[in-house]
Amino acid sequence: MNKRILFSLFFILFLASLSYAQMAGSDHDFSGKNWNNTGEMCVVCHTPHNADATVTDAPLWNHEVTTSTFTVYTGGGTMDATTGQPGGTSKLCLSCHDGTVAVDNFGGQTGGTEFVTGDKNLGTDLSNDHPISFAYDAALASLDGGLFDPTTTNSGLGGTIDGDMLFNGSLECASCHDVHDATNISKLLVKSNSGSALCLTCHNK
Image (cartoon, rainbow, N blue to C red; front, side, top):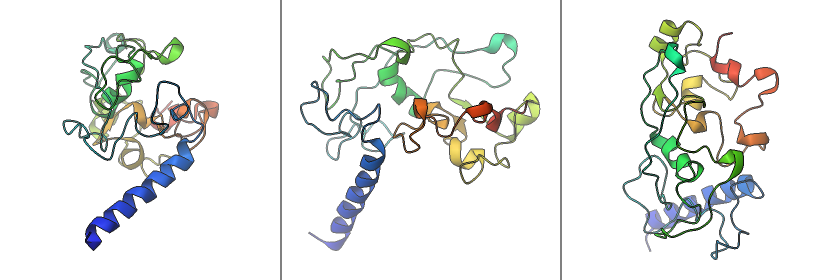
């Protein structure tokens, strides 16, 4: 085994150890579920081998992806951004949270029986949920008048909104929610929303 392969394996294991420390005991720690006979935490979403090569928005994807058509938020005519069907990382989140794909549909399994329930099941009607998968840039901020410029506004997470919270310039589920629960904040938020602090990161109110 050459040095490059050894280094790559070491790096993957190092990253996995960091994620494990953050995810252990969180809502996305599936290692103790009776439907997960691997006993592994990460395998429901990621795999080191035979990953879904069609998914490029998350590394080594291992979960069935939703094919649902969604009713999206339009803002009743007040929405300045152009919204379409959820894409990017948001579509991967919805591959459990739209309630049409079983959580245990991973590793090629498609006949799972464990579905997200309660308020964690967003369904396919997202018309009453915060819009996602739209371009949030300086032009939108200027047009809207009630948004901060994401390219210059501090996110409170170490950099700008664009650098810390957007995905290729797009606002997604993971802009506000940390799937790996690194912050250990309720509802997997990337930062506290006390006093609407998370909302006011982007909204100039």
